[in-house]
Length: 73
Image: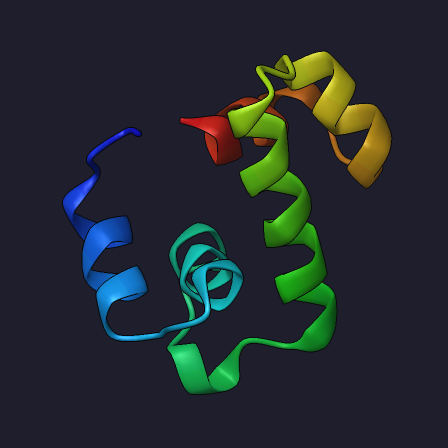
């Protein structure tokens, strides 16, 4: 629905969206994404889809609001 070119490319090539998100938000190469980072990225992906605000995401992930806001952006 978002027509995001990165997401469309990933879906087209059967890539793991949550690993790609983790790589982006944690600034690590795809092959270095940990299971914990992937799980957090998955939470971020669904938070964005469902309109969760930075405060709510910060509570779920146990991070500060500023970091949660940056993840959403």
